[in-house]
Length: 154
Image (cartoon, rainbow, N blue to C red):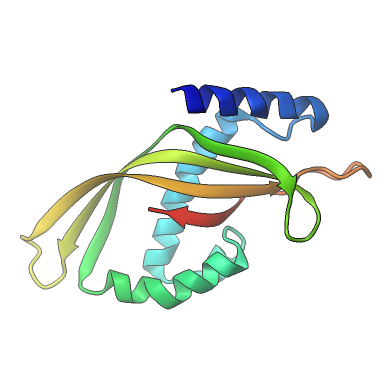
């Protein structure tokens, strides 16, 4: 995929200016793990733990919408796989810090079962685009921040 190749090249070049800001192997594993962890915490209603993984704005949106969306169904995540990098950009964030924004394309298989009749279920295979943000190291030798999910596009 040309989009993935171009974004990957740009991210590798970014490491020249910000050493160790981008690791494709770690990001690939981390993005899939984050998808699984966030969905598990949402199902548990553990918004306290989600605070460290999600932006405040996204967390607020999910607090309002997730419970209603999950009513009457049991959700099971069957498989998560990153297909490639859909978009990446390094720019100043809302606080004026230099940050890296990366949106991977995730292929996901999910199973939904009706709570009132467990014999009724369906599987869905779909693509998700979640945007991750990482504040880049400053001039004073600080480390890059941990990755945080700032947007979910299903």
